[in-house]
Image 1 (cartoon, helix red, strand yellow):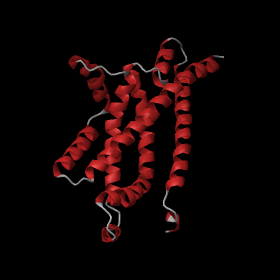
Image 2: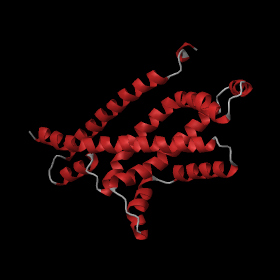
Image 3: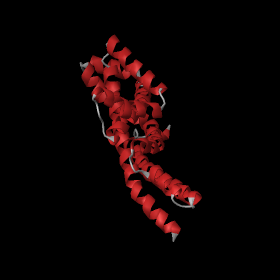
Image 4: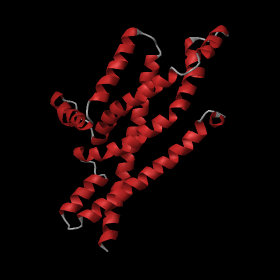
Length: 217
């Protein structure tokens, strides 16, 4: 009976874990995508700013950054909700990794493709949108999928700002009962099930958007 009660209470908090993960994943992808677009402008100042942004946020641990955004910004009259805080923090960190991934994929595109496009009179914007970006997204899909699973592992940090996700509720339950092993084992199982959900979705997307015939080489 204790096990069923634990599963019921932790399952209620799984929805918050999924919400945080999906929201932060979307935020990270948008940050990485925007940085990639800015990178292709080939403006030295903009390029330097993108690289600096990426370097800084790949170097900062997530927990101090959460404290800075959620507890520090109110000192200058900027207050954010817990979910907004997580989207900004994880979006900046994971978005920086996605940016580096997509930027690397852009360098793998055959220069002859770009030369042929210029010979046909395509503008830089048309070349980026129709040739470079589709290939970069497809080649970087496995890496982006991996980063999304990392975001799931970041989600327990949301307990710091009060989001009642799985880890927070497991911690509360463990202090009011003598079933700590059972509680945290159940929490681990729920994280695994959520991971499997993400994995199934991302495998579908990978197969859907992979370059046709890529597995034949």
